[in-house]
Picture 1 (cartoon, rainbow, N blue to C red):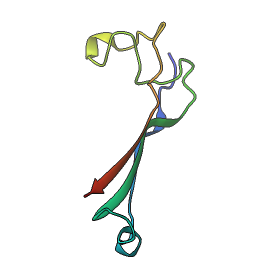
Picture 2: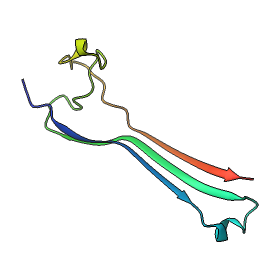
Picture 3: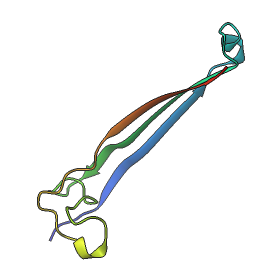
Picture 4: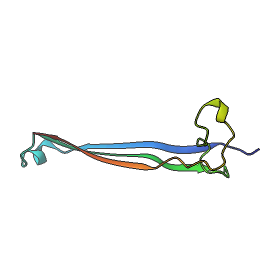
Length: 84
């Protein structure tokens, strides 16, 4: 048995709308940039990595089964919102 406590940065979202003074020099009516990331960081002493991940899924029947459990997938997304 071991401590499964953790602190995790599960999701981070950043959105920036360009000022109208910049947008009016383009053919667009609005322009914004969106960045997001998932499962970016975890701090734990748990020997199996991410305490939330196990090969049985997240239901109660799979608790404590961590053998060969894949880590939580990190993902990054970039998007633009453009008004014509």
